[in-house]
Amino acid sequence: MSGGIANLTIEEQLQQICSKVLDEIRIFYELLINQELNVNPLQVYSKISSVKDDVEVTKYKLGEYIIRVREAIQDGDLYLEILNNLEKSAQNIDAAGYRYSVILSRGNKMDDVTYRLLVVMAEKLMATITQLSESIRLLSVNPNKSLESSKAVVRMEEDVDELYRSFELKLYEKSGNDLVYIMLAKDVADRLEDSEDLLKVSSDTVTYLALERS
Image 1 (cartoon, rainbow, N blue to C red):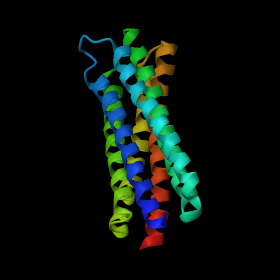
Image 2 (image 1 turned 90 degrees about the horizontal axis):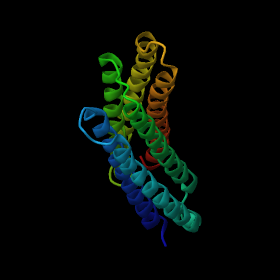
Image 3 (image 1 turned 45 degrees about the vertical axis):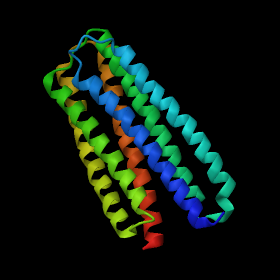
Image 4 (image 1 turned 135 degrees about the vertical axis):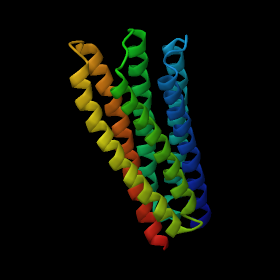
């Protein structure tokens, strides 16, 4: 198999995994914004977990393919780095979804400020994975445009860092003495922020690939 065909196959599969991670984030986001609805949050979480499981299975298959064709391509290690970071992001979102479903099941309710900060973090995460997928798509179409999408991810990662710092501050200000709630809520934000960092690292890797092709 030629390197060009292998690269295209890998990049298409990476885009598909990005789409799965985006679906996972969207389900988490729906859990956030529909928290007042009469639904069992753990049932919603089960949908998040199902997508995460699908990402892990797909990651394994693509990783196996990359190993098989790595002699025909130059950038197998970089592709594997992106792939591993996408899987870790999916696992983080799964963990955030579980912890948030526990918060709801306990009857806790976030104050308006921390709640809104968390919602915006999730929105930024959706935008980030969309931009990352686009930057991967453009690698073999227009590497210079791929670089532009990667730069957008960097800006969003900076926004999420700022949102995270504000969330952490407000959480401690407004949450009283419920240490279990504080730990759960902080871990939700931690997992989202960690996912954003991983996606930014993946975007940096895409930048290296795009620069090679520019």
